[in-house]
Image (cartoon, one colour):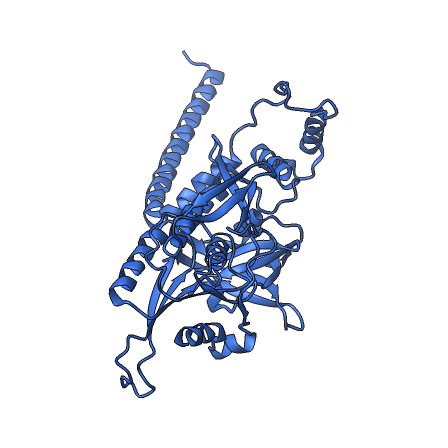
Length: 441
C-alpha cells in the first residue's frame, strides 16, 4: 500500500519523465530543422560553408605540447621560452574578456608575430583560411574586390586593380595608398590581415580610405565585392590600315597584336600559347605585350613567356647569397624573336612581370614603355604545414640577365610615359598610343 509520501514521489517522477520526453522531442525537431536548413545552406553556399569549416580549424582545438621542453639546439641559451608561457597564462587569467579567448588564435597570432619580426613584408605566416585563399588566388577564382595589394614604405598600397573587377570599376588605381579598411587604420597591418579584412562574400561592401598623388586629402571608396574570375590573358588586334571611315588604305600587313597578361597564374601558359599560335598565323607587323598592373605569379610561367623571344640564354637568376646563385635558362623556342615588340609597364607591374620585362630589355628583344615598375624582386618559397596553414619565406632575390637587382629598384622604361588621372578619367591611354606609334615607325 502506498503512503502519502510515496504517492507524491511517483507523481513527481511521472512529471519529470513527461518533461524529459518533451524536451527530447523538441530537441529532435530542432536537430531535424538544423539538418534540413544546413542541407539547403550547403547547396546554396557550399563555398561559404567550406570557409566556415576552415575557420573551425583555426578556432577549435587545443594547443599541444604546452610547457614541454624545446628540441635540442633550437633555442639559444639567452632565450627563456618560459616567458612565452608566462605571458600566455597571464592573458588567460587576467584578460577582461577571458571567455572570448581562443588558444588556437593566440597560437597562430604568436607564430605570425614571430614571422613578421623579420621585417620582410613578403615573408608571412598564413593560417589555414588564408593559405587556402592564397591557393585560390593562383587558381584565378575567389570572392573580393579584385585588386593585388602590397606594403610600400610601410603603407598598405594597391599594386594592381584587376581589369573589369570591382576595385577598378570603383576607381582604384595602382599606387593608391590605403589608410583604413572599414574605418580601421591600416598602420602596421600585415598583408594577410589586410587581405582577410578586404575580402568577403559577393554582394557585401567594404570601404577603403585611400590617397594618391594629386589628391588634396584622403577619400573613402565604397566597393561592392564580387566573384573574381580572372582570365589572365586577353588579346586584341589593331588594324592600322583602316582609316576613320573604316576603309582599307593599304594592302600591307600593318596590324599590331596586343597581348594583355594580368597575372602569371594557372591558366596563363595555355592562353599565351594560343596567342602565340594566332600571331604566327596572322603575321602582324608588331606585338605589344601589356604587363601593366600585373602583380606577378609563377616563376616557371614567366620563364616560358620570356622564352618566346629569347633563345637559349639566361632569363633570370636567383641570388641566395654572395656565393650562391641559380640561373634559369630559356626554353629555346623563341617563336616571336623576329617580331618588333613593345612591353608596357607601370607602377603596378611586379615580380614575374618584372622578370619578363627585364629579360626582354637586357637582350634588346623589346622596348619598354611606361613607368618605373614596382620593384618586387624577391623570391618566396611556400612551405605547407600539417594543420593546413603555411609559411611563405623570402629565400632569394631576382637578378636580370645583366645582373641588375629587381628588388626595390624595379625596371626602368626605355621611354617614361605616365598615364595621369586626367587621362584615366577621359579614357585616354598615352602609353598604348606611344607603343603603337613606335611600331608604326
